[in-house]
Length: 337
Image (cartoon, rainbow, N blue to C red):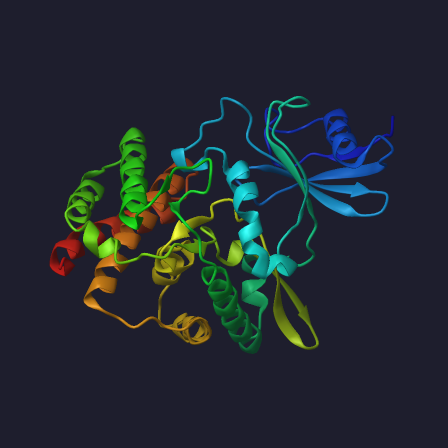
């Protein structure tokens, strides 16, 4: 048996794999003769346990889902399986996304789902954002607009999802499902859910506005600086990779996390950069119906942000999530058709 150098990272003992386990997974994926020289646990994630594995001829990424019994929110169940199901629909961006080399959901070797993917070089944008020149930053925001538009241009056949998450024939059904489950999560964490309940009641009475969206579009679900890899060189900065599409789903592109993050991070300082994004993406024509839907999506995404911040001790995210929910609950009655 080869001797693997295993460098453990930030995961707890219950989440980390042993060298023998990693070797067994590699042999199943790449054959009994595979040579594995090292495995290094990567930090920066809060959900999967991720390793950079050095084989004789390449580096690959091993992503391992949480173990049985892990405390998962409703929207975190079967994330890896959902990502595998929807990955072919990211074909237009395939050159800048990890390719799946092997996936195993049998639980025969370990009691967790896992995948091997290609390793993408690059720096995480959020790690180096402060070191970028104004020219580099502007170019990247423009590229992010083009990448987001490329994703949103892919048309699907159902809303919500992907399998095994629930899929719906109408957009309003997917939105109401997500809002109701978020309200359950917020209340279950002991947080005040009254403003979410207020927003949900207004939205339930005006589903026709949501159902004006008849064409499901692909959404990344978590596209922001922390899931973008960049490269810097003499020619400037460019987006080299887009990762972690396990929260992707189908619906109105204006509901994507990217649009919520743009709204939440808006300030006089960020405005010129956000303008570059919208110039590349194409700013939608505002209407009364789109204004109503935009506030619905603010509530929907705040319903994810608030519990996440509470569970992981991000007080700033909790504060911003509460503020977004309060503002949505106040605005929806004024904007309803």
